[in-house]
Length: 228
Image 1 (cartoon, rainbow, N blue to C red):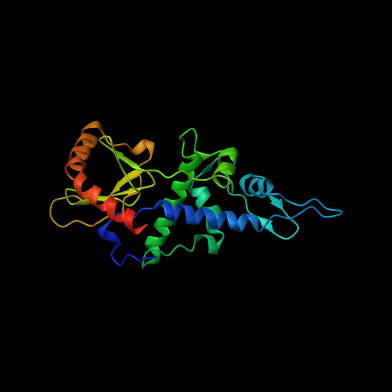
Image 2 (cartoon, one colour):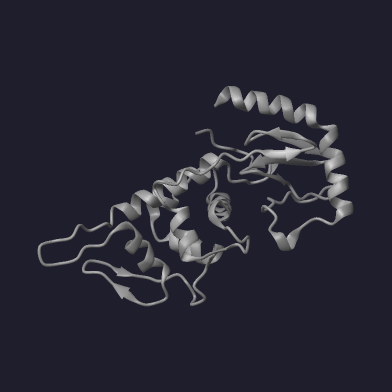
């Protein structure tokens, strides 16, 4: 996997490949904890393993003290999901970028992308059934594309909006957050949640700018498709 030496040049984003790799590692870790039923003892199946991690009740198995990550509201938000994932070093060891701080940000973005996979009521929290669906080995995450003016763009397509670079990641356009006057610090942009929506005027301006650069994005899309 190619490492980005200058992550500030593009927004830090979780691509579908990053999301799916994190999900694969978490599932692999959870499946390793399945205990078959014995002659005189009941084991633990996959759903029960997830239930133990999810619930607010302190539960202890015969070989492992399980920490609970739900704060008692029977929902896992992104912070709680991240804490759950981060307890396993192998699962979270995604090193796409050169520096650890950026990789840590990427981890949080990928947790958001995992939540979005099965968050049926769009509250950015997972109920147990949503949590179970998200990490079900039989669930095949759909490939998401970015829509713009009746066009669709592949994951990884890029375009320029004024002095900001925008990238298609997990079905969302994500842009750097630079003020386009003078020298300003480049900031990685998190994918916008419902309470952070652009105003109609801002959205119209962004769409207009993106429309101007559709040709660039289309070219990038073709290049990224060839590389896949």
